[in-house]
Structure formats: structure tokens, C-alpha cells
Length: 93
Image (tube, rainbow, N blue to C red; front, top):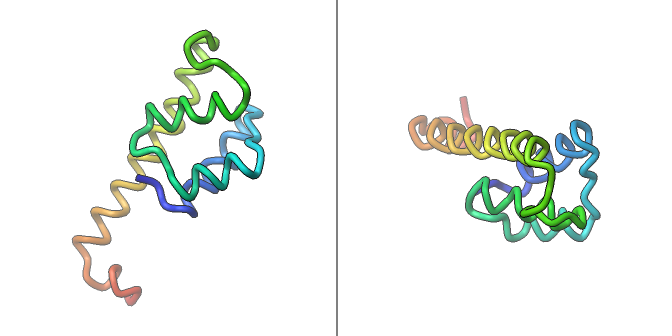
């Protein structure tokens, strides 16, 4: 699951790369209660943009989902590294 900061960074990336500049209330909702996986997050992004994910352009949908998936993978990797390194958990190097 993405942190508040990771959701905000992803929202900026989606805005810059795809023009999916989510309304502030949608960003806040996604940050407070982020979907647990990339599939649902992607669906929520399309819905927030007023688009039906089931009828959206498939190429665009796959591209957005790939960016969202990369964010989820990076988050998981960072979390694993933090768990493996006690200094990172405590904020000290």
C-alpha cells in the first residue's frame, strides 16, 4: 500500500505524463485510503478523471496501470529495505 507521500508523488507523475490531474478531493481520498493494489488504484484514477475504466482506451489504461504498478513495486521495495535495515527504520544512517 502506498504512503500519503507516495500517493502525492504518483498523482503528480500521472498529471505530468498523462494529463490526469486529479481533483484535490480525489487526491486526498486516495492518500487517506489508498487502494491496496495497482489494479484498484488505476480504476480509482480513471473514475476520478470521470472516465469509465471498462471502456477506456486500452493502450492508455495499460500505460497508466504500468506507472501505478511501478509506484507500488517501488513502495514495496523501499518498505522491505527499511525492514531489513534497522538504521533506516530508526531514521539514522
